[in-house]
Structure formats: C-alpha cells, structure tokens
Length: 360
Ligand code: SF4
Image (cartoon, rainbow, N blue to C red; front, side):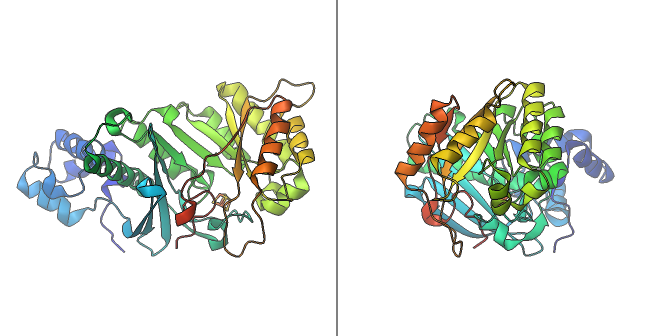
C-alpha cells in the first residue's frame, strides 16, 4: 500500500503547506491545484509550467490518485461506462458514467461495500469494506470527466452538453454517503470550489438510506445540493424487512427529519422507491405512500417520488414489477397529488444500474 500522499486528498491549504516544506512558493501550489482540477493532469511530467526538479519530486514523493483501474465495461452502445477499481487495501469500488444527448452524469461510490444490508442490493451483500477518502471520491469524478472528454474527442461532432463537461454528480454508487459523512462532504466542497473543478451545488445529488442524523446535518450545510431518500415502503414492518436501517430510524422519524430539512432549506426532496413485484407494488401500498407524504393536518411534504423498477441481483429471491404494475402504482400516486416519475434505466446489461454494484 502506498504511503505517499495522494494529491487529491490534500486541501489547497495542505498542498500549500507541503510545497512550503519543500521550499516552494505558494503560487506553485495554485499551479498544481489547477493541473489537478482544471486541466485534469494525471502525470506530473505534464505539468510543464513547473520546474523539472519539482515535477520529479512530485512523481517520486506523491501520487495523483489511489485507484487502480481493473476493468472498464461499456453498455447502452457506449453511452454507459462502468469502471471497477481496486483500492490500495484491495477492496473493490465501482463508478458509472452515463452519457445522454443533453447531459452526462457520474454515479460515484462513497464506500467499498456497504454496512446497510438492504435486501435488494448487491453492494449490501458485500458487507462493509472501506470508507473512501475525499481523494478517492474525487478521483472517480475526475476519471469520468476525462472519459467524457475522450468520448467527445472521438466523436468529432458538436454536442448539446454545455462545455462538454459532466452535468451531474450523484452519490448513489456503493455505500451510504452519510456513513462516511466527513470524507464525503469534503469531496463535495472540493469539487464545488470555483478555483478548481467548479461544479455547481445544484448539480450534486446525495442519496441516503434514511440516516436521520445525516439528513439533519445536511439541512445545516450552506451548499444547496439535492437530497434523495431511499424509502421503498410506506409501512415499518415491510421497510424493516427490506432495509434493516428502518429499525433504527423508522418511517415516522424519517418523515419528520425530511420535514425539518425541507422547511429549513426550502428544497424539494426525492423519495426513491424500488418496485418489487407483489412485495411493495400493490395499489393499496401506493395509497398508503400517498397518505404518508400528504399527511393530514400538515402541509404536504415538498417532495417527488422516483419509482425504480428493481434491477436483478444474483441470488436475491425477488422479482421485478412489470410495466403494468409500475404504471398502476404511479397512477395512484398522481391521483393523490404526489408528483412522481419512473426512472429511465441505464447500464442493466453491464450490472451498472441501481443496486447492482458488487465489485465484480
Ligand atoms: S441500497 Fe445503498 S444503502 Fe442499501 S445496501 Fe445498497 S448501497 Fe447500501
């Protein structure tokens, strides 16, 4: 395992301190920072505005990234790309880039494996393996940005994607971001930094299994990023069966925390609902969900429901809802005034879709 500092783990101040220890002026740190986050330079030898001695020292005493690429799979005619990485301790990690005609999204992992054990999810079956450092989270975005730029160069035609840059960063890959809150939030702030990668706050979305302390903490943050909450059932018994975290943070507590969040931030929350045939996709369950989100005597929750037909996971004794059941479920929600969409699927053929990431 490398003991050299990963430059993507260093804040601008920490980078300045490292360079000062080496007897270099502060502006050198700024040059290196721009190489990392603006020019996406992957090799110190290409930082040609630095002295040769400094480039050699960087190459010898630091690394630009911890992740070792093991495999790259492409699906959806090259528009979905999943990369499997090895972390320095040997744990697997996955990142998925999805390219659309008008935008590009990267789905990033915050942990290798996941301690939350949701029954429908391949990552949960791995158990918890590793908390990503800020740099390991950032590197996944930088990889996607490089991959996207290479894709456009190969096309030789114009694109509607503004600046041909990633449009969205979603933390919906392996792991529960709020379980690794400090490292995850450091990566968000760094990627947002206008002197560096400069991703707009509203282009980030974090998805949580429903960790109430994390939701309340996010409500206090200054950057207005988007929040998605995995709900998947509107009654505690079923939700606890599907998601053990519900025993710690039952639905009433989760809805209360969501209300606090929306009242504080005035931002709409997305509830994710994976549809499993004859488990949580009956019209009565849609009605119960609508009642939960439109609780009597209180203003309706500022929210939207995202229905996700379940993607197959080997060994899981579950079935995917068919189209008719999905549309029926959606119709009940809409009838009761709950805004609702069905997620467009990507990457199912390369096991890159929601809940399929298993480090294989
Ligand atoms: S769905 Fe998310 S929180 Fe649940 S086990 Fe999978 S990765 Fe973890």
